[in-house]
Length: 101
Image (tube, rainbow, N blue to C red; front, side, top):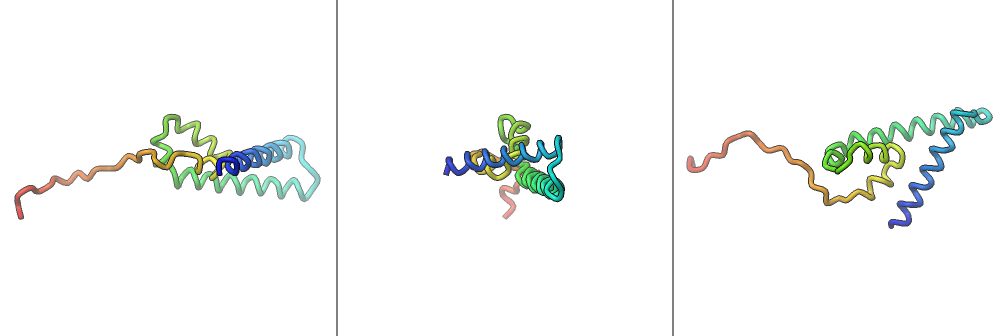
């Protein structure tokens, strides 16, 4: 499974490199427009992943670095994060009634 995640990250890095190259030196039409749309759509999807996993990322040691990697690699980075990381729970502010039963 780890090899699949690494291969996915490599392919994602190649994709972002091609998108960046297209921004610097546009490819022939309609490929330039299609590549820009694909890059924008993928960035939107990775942004939604950031929003969905925000609480899980807040417990990481370096959440800023994790967020950048999720923007670049998406689910390939999220799946590699430890699922056993504790999530901070909100405690109810209601007092417990001990003997009023």
